Length: 100
Image 1 (cartoon, rainbow, N blue to C red):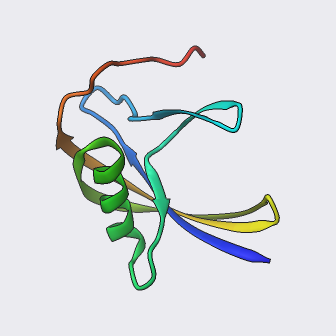
Image 2: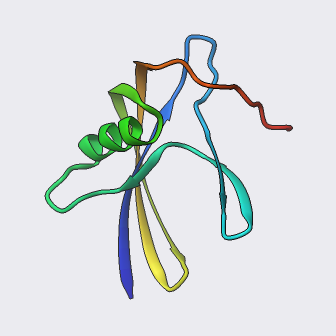
């Protein structure tokens, strides 16, 4: 079975709001935290910083490690490393809030 190793970063602002990305893939609409694949030789913190910069243009400082989670999906094992961070960068083009 294939293994996919990912890093994700939970970024909050001073008001406690969480930065989420709104994606539409394969006919699904979903909200998710910024993140992506960890490159060979890269650690989870460095991958999270890189992915946040690539996806949303925010330079993030990692605050702490939150943990890991593994799950099976699409005939692959997904291993997700989560960190929390604070960041600054370009202003968002728009803001959306998800209905509860």
